[in-house]
Length: 373
Image (tube, rainbow, N blue to C red):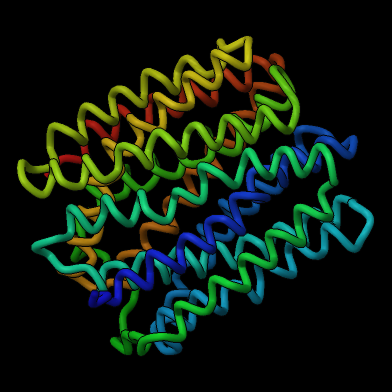
């Protein structure tokens, strides 16, 4: 059986997803569990937004010269120290900031590099099905890892969880060594952004940033604070991932044959409705059910949107496009955390959660309106 280069990307992403998913959703929860406030936990997420907003462009310039796969490997030079700092030093505000900066710089490098590599490795005629596979096969790790992470965190502690995470991140480098790297040495500048219809793409990027943080990071905090402990947080993320793993293959096949407009609209509207109900959940069973359904709806809209982004990147400059995307995704991240902080300060934390999830629902309406070609 002959493997395509994109198959190696699937394997890399599977191992990486296992290493990050077993621990990533628990970092803000860990901060809370150590007696720190919602503002400290939110600060870690806020840093993610600011690194994307401010560093995406210079990072993409570096990746263009060093290579996309080198960028994926280099991301660990920041992700791993960010994780290790939390283990070896006593948790403090300064440590949260330092760890957050390192960890999230690594995530920006990874995001730009993996999206650019996918756009190069996949082909136009099979991009719909390739997008379904890319968003399903590697994400089977996210079905297992969060619930396993919750059990390990509860029984053996955060340090053991971190060691397992680092091991899988190290293993994920191996598939990147099999084939040659890709580079883009074109000189580009954000002054060339007039080539894009910013009124079309920027709202999509911001909305994706809102959805990503509100439905994952903030919902994990909501689960920990309002409903249950770390094990329930893990189960919610695993069921969410199970929903979009089961749906990804089918969605990729459907859009390959019949087009992407209707699935994108149906998925975005369905996900938006589910997002708006998150703040009114009161039991683990309700949260588990919603997470599974949200995973299904997420994938129905995200596979065609992911495919469309790859098409748009291929028509222009790949790294410039994904740097622009990550910049405005970062702005979406910031909007979520500032909404939570503002409503918590003036009203209550419960109101803050509800406001964030309603914002996530509104973001899905924007994607339903702007997403289809």
